[in-house]
Image (cartoon, rainbow, N blue to C red):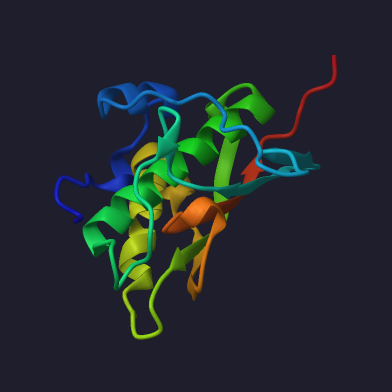
Length: 169
């Protein structure tokens, strides 16, 4: 699953330009399904609400790991969750170049009780963040199993990101 991951220390280009180099396009912000907002800035940090693997109007996959969803599909879901989190982050900050550090990722994995490969699923998000932000994309992370997620999603991702201080004009 990590094939083709470049050395994160070499990433120097703008994160949005890097997305294009990877053949990726930032999606529209996924609208909330309840009473919350996609992201909130507090001082130098942006908290991105839980993002599911929504793409082109539907979930990339449904169900649980260890049952109907493979680890490879879970990895792809986590990667899509990260793309959606980046869209919410850009909407909040105006520019992904504002990110000075990805601080923490929290990956929820809907899974059977005997499934134990949560970290490998979470790598889908973590690998993308390192690809885009280089060393600033290396982050603390928890990957935890849960019985169910909203909309029968197999994966959900929350992010905490440090951003550069806004200059006052």
